[in-house]
Length: 62
View 1 (cartoon, rainbow, N blue to C red):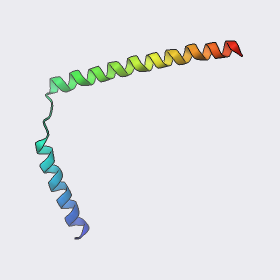
View 2 (view 1 turned 60 degrees about the horizontal axis):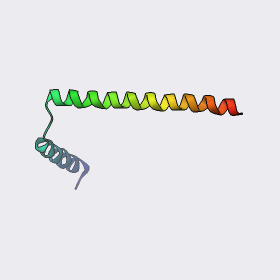
View 3 (view 1 turned 60 degrees about the vertical axis):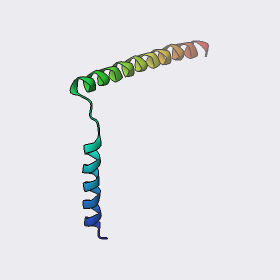
View 4 (view 1 turned 120 degrees about the vertical axis):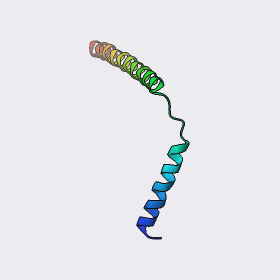
């Protein structure tokens, strides 16, 4: 089977599978994305704060 036939078959199958996907509404996608961004920011702030505090503690000990 030549490469172009394989590519065509692949994209036909992808198109078929995409039609089966249950896509969220715009409202749900925005809400879920907002939650992910907020949790990421909180986690980054916490880890950054812990890094800062532990860095100060280590530097004061040595």
